Structures are given as C-alpha cells and as structure tokens.
Image (cartoon, rainbow, N blue to C red):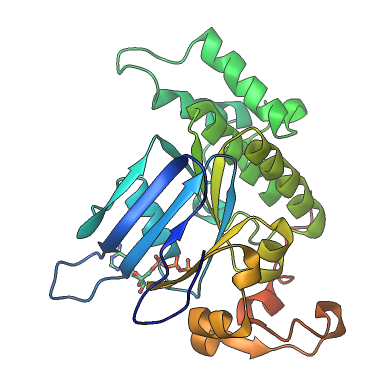
Length: 275
Ligand SMILES: Nc1ncnc2c1ncn2[C@@H]1O[C@H](COP(=O)(O)OP(=O)(O)OP(=O)(O)O)[C@@H](O)[C@H]1O
C-alpha cells in the first residue's frame, strides 16, 4: 500500500468503494511559476475510515483540507468526494458572540437548505439530536464561548453532523485538550467512523495515529506515505518531519518509539482542563 521513494510519491488506495478520491493533486496559493504548497497528492479512502493527516507546521494539512472543501482549486489533478464538512480549530472560532451550542449546531443546516428557507422545528430537532450524539445533550442552551475547549470541539462536530456530510475534515481537533476531553472526543470520532463516515483528522500526535490503527497520510508538501500506521517507520517520520523530529528517551514512549515530532512532546502544555 505504500512506498517511500522521494522521486515517486506514494500513491495509496484504500480497498473498497472510495468515498474520497484525490488524484495527482498539485495546489498552491500563488500561480506557477511560484512553487506549489502541495504536489503529487494521490490517495483514495473508503467509508468508515479515520485518516490521521500528519505533517510538520506548514506541511500543507490545512491546504489539503481547503482543496477538499473546494475553497482552493487545484493547479492539477482531481478531487472526487460526495460532500465534506469541516471542524475548524476552535481557537479560530469567535468566542465573544452570544450564541448557544444549539445555534452553532444549527448552522450546519443552513448549507443544506434552499436560500429562502430558514432552519425550522425539524432542523432544531436534528441539531439537538446531533448535540446529544456528541454527549452534549445537557448543554444545548449554554453559550458556546463559555464551554470548555473539548466541549466546543464537540459542538463543532455536531454542526458537521447536522450538515450530514459523509466526509468530515477535522483540523487538529485534539490540540489543547486534556486527556479526559481528548478521550471523549476520540469516542465520538470512533462512533462516527463505525457509522460509515470517513474522517480526515489533522494531528501532530503520531502515537495517537498509531493507536487508531486505521490509515495515516504523511504530508510534507509532497505525499510522503499513505497506508496503515505500520508504515510510520523512522525513515518515513524523518522524511515527514525533517528537522522537527526529535529523539525521545522518556520512558513513557517505550524503547521502540525513539523518534517523534517535536510538537508531540509539547502536547501536554496549554491544556484546557475542563472536560
Ligand atoms: N492563504 C494563504 N496564502 C498564501 N500562503 C499560505 C496561505 N495559507 C497557508 N499558506 C502557506 O502554505 C503553507 C502550508 O500551510 P498549511 O496551513 O496548509 O500547513 P499546515 O500543515 O496546516 O500547518 P500547521 O500544522 O502549522 O497548521 C505554509 O507555508 C503557509 O505559509
């Protein structure tokens, strides 16, 4: 499923009917001859899969998501997907708007409704259901900005559920969450995958990606590798993270886990400790 030759970026195909197919994509913010931000991206993913999208800062994870959402047209190549919803980084959400968790989840209905229809009773019921599905049934009327980071992240997952998209893109959803909040979110994501949704999850946590035992996509402007987490060898991690890779000798990572991206060691800092 994977090779790691730099001259020949990995082309990956997840067996089964693809829900998402990215074929030979090159993309950038400025036209050629400016170098592209992403080059030679080529993978397919079937239903019900979690894909950990790994890469250094500036490696192109968010840019790939923008291409998948149709916000950035590729310079070359094609993207085929039914419909995608995005769960953005919560730090980028406005927290000073006086909106409730229900209001935020309800925003997911707007993209599905014709322009003349405002969300009504059916959509409100759906938003409540989505909030209950992410474990926030008791918090529908709470102000979004007053919720913890983990709760806000789950409200944004509920909004994506209301959009009813088969593919959900999550941009570093675990960033800043403490262990309890991260575990709650992990459970929600595992359930969504079990229901047949495909999740692309940008993360800096290589160990977490290994733990899911699903799929990993390693990006460093080029596609370094795509396939099962077993491909996360030292060589692949070196090519993915380059200078960001550090040798770890702390006991918690075990003797076989001697290299990790630098962010991994920082991921306990700055946590929001409300679940
Ligand atoms: N709107 C933009 N216009 C021009 N360049 C951009 C724009 N957005 C991102 N870039 C550049 O594209 C490159 C890839 O950025 P991107 O945000 O996709 O990386 P990332 O892997 O998501 O990084 P991080 O882990 O830091 O979020 C970076 O060099 C960045 O400066």
